[in-house]
Image (cartoon, rainbow, N blue to C red; front, side, top):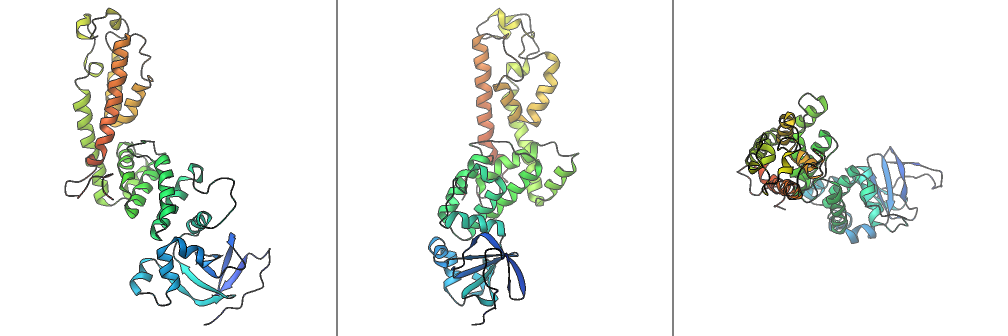
Length: 341
């Protein structure tokens, strides 16, 4: 077994040479007595093989069997370095992200941290990478931890948070597709489909980065979404009535005070077009504004009408969110988003 000739280890040495290439030692995960060197990008990690093989059945196969089946090595994009030993440690090369590998090692190797490496403060995109690499190498406990955090910070039907940009929505879609994490797809498609990106170069590029099928999915899903919104909202008094002088057509309790504000409406009649447009284009956002009373103060409604107005719009949010998986699913697919594996 061939061996490279490493320079002596020292605390201020940051670079090493392996197989005629230069690598930077990872600032945390370079343990001078480790028995395994992992090369990722241009970064070298020196760790203890036993910690990895105990946590990952995939890494156990890759590291403990000298001759790997071609399909296994190809599937996990791993290969032994041309220099199989460095300073007495075996060498393996992984075609992953050095940042992802470093964060995975932060989690599975014994370290002294004041805060957990996995938390909402870790950063969304770092968590996406960690989930992907934990799934790839079957580190199931880490995968469970990071998915639990991602379900708090990414939009799902249970927690429909907003995304910051069309690029973020597209990244989530690509990641969820690659990892088969379908629970993150409905809300990502919702925000991509309802975002007004047509005249936005960044938004156009984000949409173009999707497959043709997913671009069509977003367009068809928006059409289905608007049909549901019209069906639910059209009969509603706040959307339908222009305003009358007789309370029998407004307040279910027949209270005259409900007609003193905006002529029987929740908002001025001049706002009808804006309210309808926003309801069709951004239904969840519009409904949340109504629930939070940001559209109108509602002080001109009686308690009964105010509570009924808020309750209905809250229920409409729930109805739409629960339908998102099927709205953005083609009929020939085996399961709607959020239901399959």
